[in-house]
Image: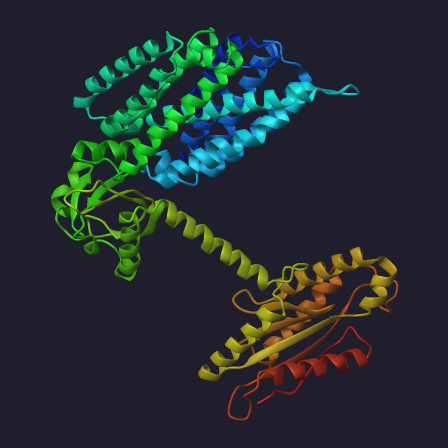
Length: 608
């Protein structure tokens, strides 16, 4: 049940096939549904296959295709029953209830992929199916559906019909689930071929024919005693042919039992006093018990494990799952078989430890042990050494193999997803770089933020200390910015900040320098390696570029946006070990420039 990456024509055909199958099953069930009893209980059908088949389909299709198949199935049911005469009210209320129940049941049962794939027939798996997949959902849906059918707005509810109908709905749906879900799961070609060897298929066909004859003979008379003989075929089928045998034999039994009873003949009708509807309930119950008994025997006899006995079985398992490789690891930890066969000479009889990352060895050992113990859903993702010696990332599923002489191997089915993983890692690195850039950038101006400035200043100071060079700081403040905001509004204020930021960036030396927004309307330019003269030149270019913007400022004596600038240069050495002293000197120079009338540049003495 691997999920293909994209939608294909094959997917479209599969969804259309689901629609056709469910529509046909619904039409056939409704066509032969009407059995009217003296108690006015209308039995919709001996079984209601639509929901059972829908559930089975949702279990076997790839997970990402479940919504498409669910829509197709429920659309088929709705359109078919509308054509055949169901009222809109019953459809609009009853159908969502059924859809919700089926979807929840499918989600619950899909948690056991080993059982779905036929790798596990454990008691626990079948009890999950019978309890959580049959009895609970059908019981939950039966009463609401019956109530909807007989509720008349403003006219009350005929409870004498609701409760019997709820029982009938429960019986028809429960039987459909218990019949059709195993049919789809265990009679699929891949599972059937694996579970029923070619040499036994003739025997199975003879058993099914005998079952049909026995059931027919039992239903041609009113005496109920021969019915007890019907318990024998499911048990024999379970012992000889596993779940496929049980499924085939019980389907034949149920067909004969339900068909003859619905026609008004047989011991069930006699036991119910001639009422075919009540007799049909007994026939449904008997069919359910026969299937449950057969499945119980299968579960008790289950040896578990993937049915891999030959290299051909292993290759089929690999190809059916769309995997890149499959291998069998014996109880001694050595590789016993590999698919595709071309890699066998390089790996056979070697330990799995020769191929996995040593750091993962303990984890792999735990997963292998869990798979041997029958754990479902055991997976492994990690680095594995390929035949060419390179490390490849694989995603694999580990399942227990068939028991042999007391030792149980495991079967590993997986694919090489190295390219996908590397692409994912590259996307992750790119995203991390974007996040790092965003974390170090002022969102309004696009300049470095204070965090990035502090980091760059520390780095520049260490480099200058090692090289014996200077570090200069230029502090820039927009003059009368609060009055500008008050007069023009914050939107225009943000535009002014962005425009000044562009002027700062354009004034930087082409090879070095970092412009940052320090806070509010204050900016800082870091100039590693620049002496006092070079820093003063940068400050003058900044002032000129800001004036050239010619941004009006009616609340400033200059009549336009201007800046005040402080410049300082530091020489790291024994007498100057704190880079923040240079910033303090530049900030003091900026204060003098503002006190002197603004729109000026002031330089501080070198800090050394």
